[in-house]
Amino acid sequence: MKKIASAICVSGVLAFCAGAVQAADDVGGRNLAAACAACHGTNGHAVPGMAAMAGMDKTYIVKVMQEFKTGKRPATLMHQIAKGYSDDQIALIADYYSKQK
Image (tube, rainbow, N blue to C red; front, side):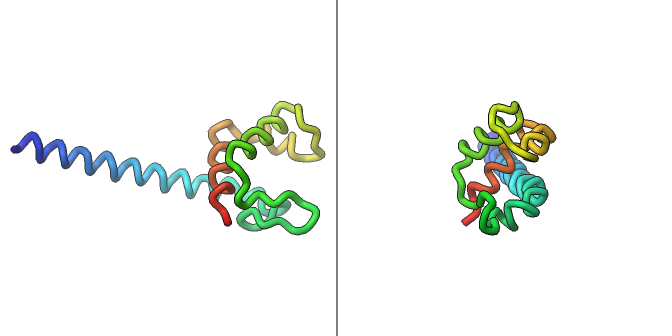
């Protein structure tokens, strides 16, 4: 019985830690995406003439950012900006924007 209680306790701690990591990722993505607001609007709701990021497919955002980062996709500023982010940071930003309505 003691082993079962210990296993349940460990499972609970692991679930809590996983939730805390997920919450940190959500905040991290939001914080990273804040730098994009000047051009792409708050929470990805851009002004006319600029790409709106809110609700965009995560995979597509990552693909486009990687294309900017490698220079495959032409841009005036985005290729410079994208080079400043790690692949993990790009994934966090993409995840954040994909969840916006």
